[in-house]
Image (tube, rainbow, N blue to C red; front, side):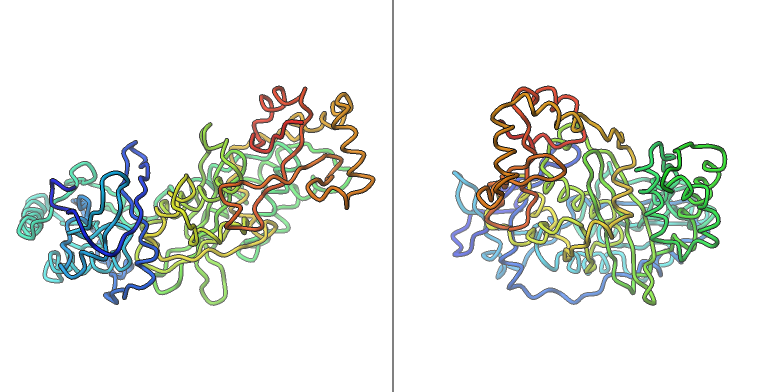
Length: 487
């Protein structure tokens, strides 16, 4: 960046720390922690485009090109009076400042949209539109498309801007743009929006069935005759009823699953209303749902779900919940970028994300990755976060025993454990760092890297007798290994 004239050495009195954030392609994004600078910066009031208006004008497109601006922010020159405020420190290399707009600065989206409006202005409608760093060109004939494409590319070149060739698609019959599919048939929803619901697996256990019914009940006011349709399923939840999955249950399940993935449950976005992202993380996956509240009714726009890889499953509970937030915001970026939105999580500790004091470690890197968005985090009780919770467990093996059931028997072989258990049970007031829940012993052991930031983190760790730890860790894939404490 120094050689390219994007930054230069500085003697500014201002300084912000640097963090390297790993991207999906394995490369790193250079991030500066501008939270303090953003707190005292006046944000541009320049409006973003109304996506609804853009999408309405894209109908009947036979040839479509989408262009992605290469490192868009770095193509915007800063006013020389602003250089000093962007200064950042690189350990061992000194102090530098930006000559072009950096990522993470408040007002970045509005500033970039203003630039693109000057390049791709109203005079190019109705065949070319820009939304932040995305440009779409549509036409009804191939010859016309080449003419319009050449005109747009000339405008971009004249403005000394460049595009990202790898993320640009030329003369297509169908493309994804701003969260929808644009093709010759018109505008239609992206199948990815409903994939987690249409692929929702049939329950194999009573626990999974209750989870499904809990999610469906959340939207039952949209589901006509829900009680009647769900009766074969609710029948299995009655006391003493044997869990037998037959044709009646399968038919009921498929009807409910189909209803959840279509209107009136699923809606089109309205950019006049605030977006809300609900997130959750289980031991094996992440889940999220994008909603809006319109006329006091929660309307669903998109469902999302993915499994966690082996490394992610070893994260602490707090890290997994933070990962869910980062992934969900990136997943729903076409909707929320440039707008204020809310994130709802059942992990109250995430409310400190904006207040990390020392930007080091995985959590801090993620917090800086999120600083480019205008959002607030709200807490919702787990019992009310049923939709995101169910989506996060789509791929979960429901092995409820998972060696934990044998723990109460095996712990009797460990004399130290047996004595401590008895002492805590007899005089709990003398052991404030231990507690017994469900006939199992827990030890209070907060995560030292964040204990100065939050008070309610998930710090109670299951105490496992020493002779069982290796076997328990190997077989208990649904349990975070950081919960193990050696006795």
